Length: 554
RNA sequence: GCGCCUGUAGCUCAGUUGGAUAGAGCAACGGACUUCUAAUCCGUGGGCCGAGAGUUCGAAUCCCUCCAGGCGCACCA
Image 1 (tube, rainbow, N blue to C red):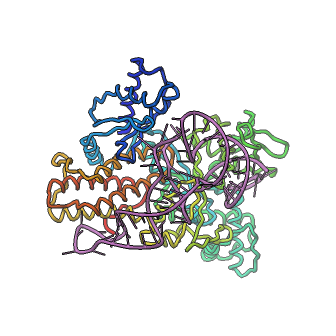
Image 2: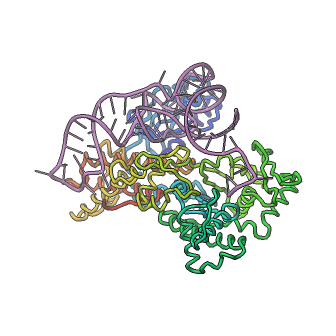
Image 3: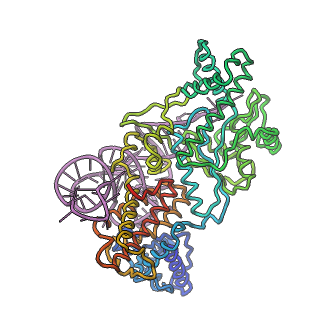
């Protein structure tokens, strides 16, 4: 609808210029807004205001010229008016709204799907937590945001691959193996001291206990380095499996799990660094290898190979992103915790040195979560073992409420997650508000069926019975759904869907309280059932993108 | 000290690349269940959009300077 009006305006503008009524002007963009105020019509355009400066004319005058040259060939416009400083307001014919409703009914689960992605291959990497411990609440936000962004982009017509990068090479993993060994010794009766760098969670004891049960205490006197390496791989695998299960229960399923170790096969990382050195992006100071990230705007150069000869995480990450692009992805999206923001210039430098456009890598920062319980902050640290796991949140709060809670705010906004609040099954909890709207519609459908009323078919009904102001508001809101998807997908902002859903549910609830859908008047009933069914379709489609279930009964 | 994010109603937050009178939920107060589900609805109050200066027809939104909070500033990941 928005697009149609934009086209009309563009045509009118061109005609005005051709006729010489307006000087040659270029229009960088125009805004057509679904207006909130009924007095301002259904849509409002600000073309004239934007052009005023360029054309050096009064915006109202410009608006009049454009208005005069509008040719409404599809016959969708009831009337237009010029208002305020020079807005052109459009009033759309009722039957056009009715057709929109039919469109929803026909498209059903496809309604809201777009083709702005043109099947472009996009990879989204998220979560990517070290397998050194179970996922905690902090990972959960990134997981949901990533998951919903991929759903959004799929809906918008992109071909998406979801990937989890496993940091299973390096110090942290070594510390994991060491921690298991220490617990192993402890369980075998030795007295041990636990260093700061080791992981203290109970899951470490469980893993160590598992090894004793299976293999006894034969590793007490083995070569320590080999044992640590063996324990590391056992622990890493066990923990990763648990992570996968937790994610699955949270509704997040990845297409690929990519191991950091993969990058080191066949000296992959070293070869890449050699190549970059030949190209002049990497240099040696005799002891260490540096990447000239300052060439690309970073504040200082970064080490890629340490004094001890080991490549850094950054080195592997360049190789990883090279690998991503070589797999044919046209765009790559990384979702990180906001505490990694200082890392962005480095990685952008990396991919530019590899010859890729900076814009091909989008990085979304997700702000950290403050976990509260009844208003009191809960301390968290993976290493000390004090944390609330994703599993606990799932068990306590439930999948739908947890997901919805993480989607109610912009990614770059700090989020307080209060366990007590999130698990409350009350009106404090917005997820139920939306689900309830859906359940109510299902209830109406059930009632209609019980009374032997057939589900309405467009050809048989007369939508001109829909005369209540809320009915028009509802239809307009439903029409806005694809536009909301468009905006959310373009800006990679899942929270827009949540806010849209809240608004839609709100207007529906209000309508429901004021009007009976099923009444004595058969034609009115049919028209309203048709409308309410369309609301249900949109609720379902949007909830599906959020990964929140659309309940039929509550 | 430098960089990034945030600052909007008592609280938690929206505000669609600058647009018409700044919105929602919660909390407070007053109402609505003989009804297709009251997990709902209707009404009332509530604002120096952190502060100051600037850009223009027009600023919560853009530029600059401050103030406050969070997070970074590794040969950790």
